[in-house]
Image (cartoon, rainbow, N blue to C red; front, side):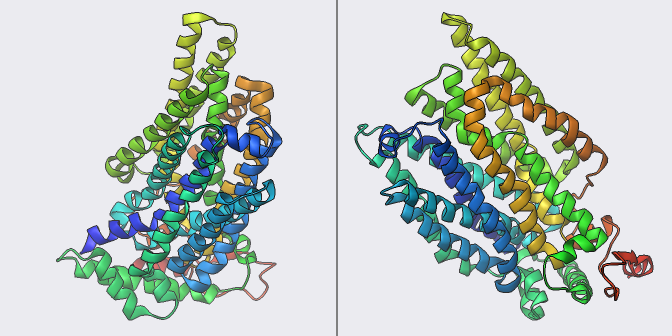
Length: 495
């Protein structure tokens, strides 16, 4: 079964990422529905729309943090189920909303669920992946996020063809998200739990069977046994460092460093501006002179382009070139595209006739460029890098913190302020992302980030200068854990 089963597991688990993309993208079309705007007495550039999007992101912050607890207690697979169940409830509330409060509560629940799944799905995929194809396996997270955006856009576009007096234009897109929830709840239990979680919960025999199911190709029994022994050795060693609560992540020096890497890659992803474009691209098209159904059509095409580039990248490039080079390329490329977008935006209002039409096309082109470059850099790599650099003992809580704070908290802020900023400053708004990318993202990736391609999760422990062997010092507050382990690290390397 081997690699095919491994990929099938990753694809099905990524249904949770599909929900991430669908829920994130669906409001782009919903807020363009005249019936929706009339029903809730608002317009696309008000704080109410910002609140609808920011409550989704805000719910995801807390959902991510909760996922860190449920992953350790109930496992990776069951955490995905919990997220899907919460999302199902949120979908029902949004679809049947009779007032703004129901929409907001439904969006909070949907965000909560997406927060849970956005940090648990990549971890589940990463712990089940073969080191040679881990980029592809975890990169499927971003691929399915993109597919979710595509489906949300075209469901919204199709629903918008009804008369303006019909609530179908927004109730159906919001209710549609219940379908993948039901599929995920019903099917995920057909796949095994992560072998690393099984070993951690004293089910080593079951874990070995899962490793064979995931990776056996008819001739690699020695590798599977070696991988099993390596996982078992590392997890048993890390159990000596088990401390309740979240404080341990910030106290162990090597773990603190890895938590910083994971959180920063999520922050940098948000600071590309990609979610602002995703949520509010119809406002940007309006500033370029593109309105109504034409804007929805362009939005639909925009959401298709990114996943095509992402699929090409994760299949052919990611596991060959690694993580750092695409991130550096992405930072520079997105920055240039945003500068060009701002330059065009500054000229559109002054232009008339065919010149304005040409500038509008150029503006759309550079927004598309941002999506394409993002899909070949931060899009897939943010999930891959975050999930693979965490040591097992804090993988749940660490990924929860990185996703909740680095991704969703920043996203919440942008969701609230972006429609106001775009309305007031228009093209000048892009320079916030340009400045951050040049002054913070680029030097940090170049000087700080490490290359992790084709290393096992246990080998990455050594890359960061730490194998979690030994015991905690008696006074944890006075002596950072991670010092004095050099000899044990050398013994592990020799073994």
